[in-house]
Image (tube, rainbow, N blue to C red; front, side):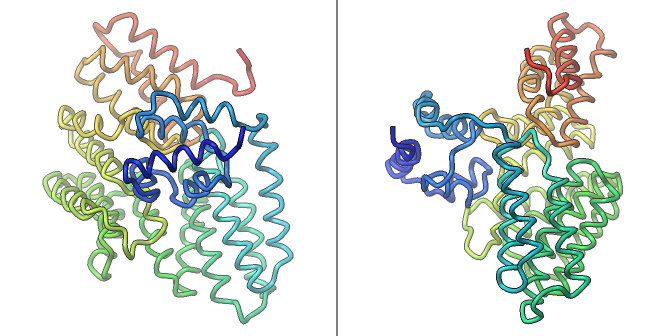
Length: 399
């Protein structure tokens, strides 16, 4: 069986439905470059991507059957990916000019792909090790000076990715250092795009740590001083909204979220940075629901979170479970036992494949609710207990 059978079938389906690869990537919240490689037959699809495409294209499991039939022999993520990371780090030590720039860019790209594909594996450690090599060489001037700005720009991107991974692993101090380094290198090289992405990350990090006024200040420093593309403005409107609701200004937060939603509704990606692929209407709905949850409007929060947590349409990482965890908490808060149990069962299934420290903490908070529920059916408390067991499970135990 030809290994290109899966990619050809998907391309045929997209052609029949007049759908572009970029539109599919945006709808499923996948990296456009990764999806292009899969549909070009250059990379095997992840199980999560196959499921998402099956659901989107309504093929009733046809794509899953093809993927299983043409799949190569299974190997562990460690066996498949560790040599690739090791090889990249060796190249980071050896290259000097344009090849150094390329090696850094390829390392960053690989890390992003791994972060999307291997949802149970954190990229924080390999990203940190790779950047330390680049950082040392930048400090020592161990490179061809003709390529200095390009090297600094590539290093800024690698630092940004590392800062994001550390933030998601809840290593706050390290994340803050890498974000600051990314912003420094982006400004040094004149890379405005990576500077914007890093500022977005910094605002998100501040909000997550409860520093809501700081998050708001970062978002508004960008919104007030820069000309932004629609998608990037939407991103910072979303960050502005989270800072606003965190400081008690709920109506202003809703206005910012409405503005963010309107900015991305036309679907025009011309002039948008490649890294903005993840911002979708579903992503905004997730933050909107969270904002309403923070404000105490649980019923309206549920409406938004239901839109964000639709099964089969999220990214291939554990981050898609954040909205599900928040939805479960809201449903428990209003004693919607049956609906809560359905969502919690989905978390039981998802939990073993999640490496995101932030997501696991949210799910863990949901699991602990079994200790305080009054009048809940036994099936719900049993499901919550099962969820707690899954979170505590040794990943190397086979059953």
